[in-house]
Image 1: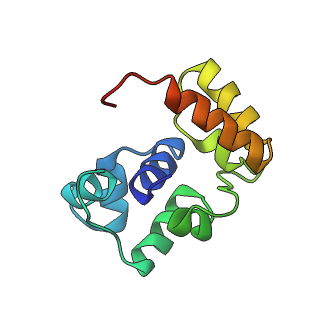
Image 2: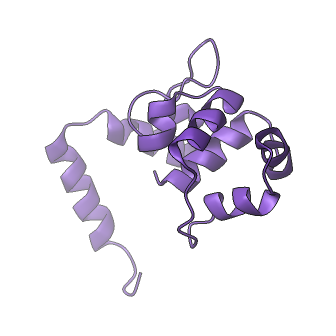
Length: 120
């Protein structure tokens, strides 16, 4: 998961709009939009990432690198549950995929890529 998606995921799960996050950080909404844009290469500083992690209640390591648990609440929500997946079938597929060993994952990936329409 890219940094832009992790920032967006953390913000949405914390119930914040881009404007809310920007106000709490004392920055412009445009900065948040740029961080969350996959087309834009703007990245917050390490210090700013730390502020975002505190405001959104996620682990700094997960936010900065994608490693570890997201921990979005005191109950501890893992990174799988923090992803913005609306399709229940996609969630089941991702969960099952993550529970498999590397050989099975590679076989599934090859199968899916082989069945994809040409040009994608």
